[in-house]
Length: 90
Image (tube, rainbow, N blue to C red):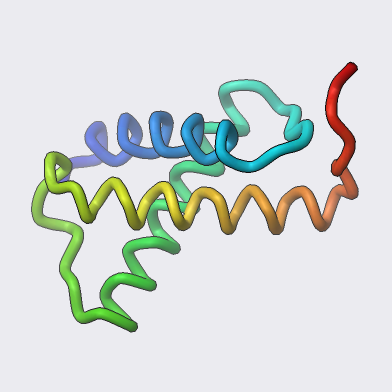
């Protein structure tokens, strides 16, 4: 995948991961982009390490999106645990 494809995948996967994980994440769309990019990297590493799946071939494969979103949820959860943001917005 190209650099632009990783950014697009990261932005969308980060936004979906933040919707899945409850609570207030803060930091706007830049935080969603960073969460998604780190999540896509983490998800790709998990896919290759545990399941021997190469997710770097195509942005249009379902497993690429699944592991990117899974990684994004993990990264967002870790970010919430570090910053202590667990409450919901009222």
